[in-house]
Amino acid sequence: MQIKPNMPAPPRLFKLSTMMWLSAFCALAWLFIELALLANSGSPLAWDRSIMLAMRNPLDLGDPIGPRWFEELMRDITALGGTGILSLLTLFTCSYLVMQKNRTLAWFVLITIGTGMFCSFALKYGFSRPRPDLVAHGSYVYTSSFPSGHSMMSAVVYFILCGILLQTQTRRRIKVFMLSCTVLVVLMIGLSRVYLGVHWPTDVLAGWSAGCLWALFSYRLLRYWQKR
Image 1 (cartoon, rainbow, N blue to C red):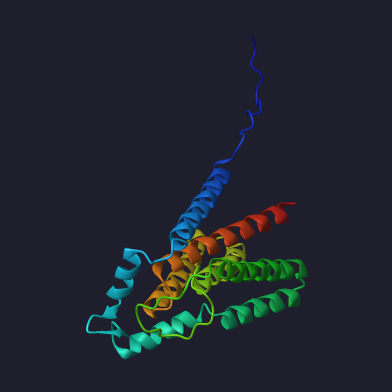
Image 2: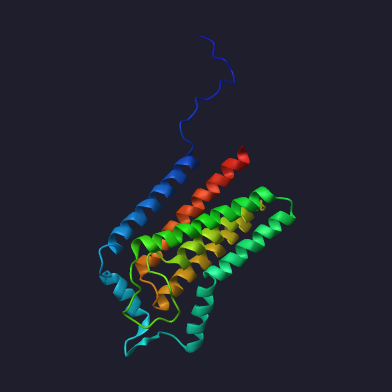
């Protein structure tokens, strides 16, 4: 029997990249659900308390470890995940996209980040976990504790904007650098919340997982829209 040349390969049900995205979705969703169940149990976990106390002077729990300038630096870092800073950054980005005649992408950024912020407040209202009372707060707070809004919204905003910027680059080294900087900023914002005593570590982990889940979904939605 003669074999025909250039026969098309049989189609695969799922591409490897699709499987990786689905695995990431499932892992982040599972992590958030597990943390939500732990947070809903009432009392803080032992490792929540241990991590928070490790960041405090054992002789004075109202004094975070490190010099004064480091404590002030943590306040500066935590401000990067505040509602005001993130809202301004989003509005500036959308304004720039409109000026570049890219209104559709501007609306996409505004809607995805706006709905992410709504989900953050809805989750806080739904769980209503009290703020930590183990140590004195180093920052003013006015909402409930779970999940950390700073951690969640910093992941949503910075990763969505990073995803858009990555599409403007072709060099792999530049892409890795941009993504690494984004990850570092998001991690530092979450850690600053625990350092300042306004969140349990489980709050921050839940915020990271929910924020990354939302940003990942938004980015995949953007890629699907661009291909169409």
